[in-house]
Image (tube, rainbow, N blue to C red; front, side, top):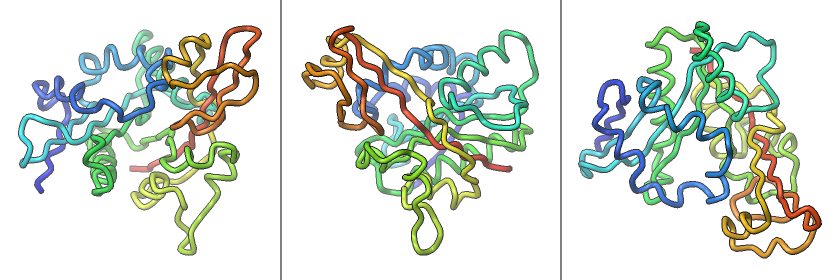
Length: 247
């Protein structure tokens, strides 16, 4: 297996591959975070050097993984509770005001579902770290979505992220990849991604009835979704974990 990881700045012709073969990579409800469109609708055109495609020589014409990042200006002493949503917002403000960015945030590293558990996530993270450093930045941050947290939705993220193995590395596989790559876990972004919808929308996204008020356990969700039948809406507030990479 020979994996070639390049940015769209180098290979803009690979852009169409990033929308193919990734169906089911994320739970359907996650595609409805309103802040996502602010970034993804312009990422290929405005941030091509921060968008990456991985192609296996054995599968020409298909991407096996993709990764997205964005530059922004952040000078506050702590990374935000707003996590993923907040860095997308701040990146847009940075661009629109002409402010000089000073850090880069990862937005997504996604492995094609049939190519998972083969070490590609570590390769993508390494490629992103190297590219960001070569672009002159000394810091890459990531609002990490721990890959095993969906199996423990009722456990607070703070407690989950603090779990370590005997060797001191995180129990969570994706957090462990970041730490092994040199990242440092800083804090929990308690409201990193917020997705709201009517009960009909949540039913269409999940196939669940959403017919009783209270917490609803949704497959793929890291925490319960809050359902309010009387007011016909449900809200998902996802926590992530901030990891900082010094490059």
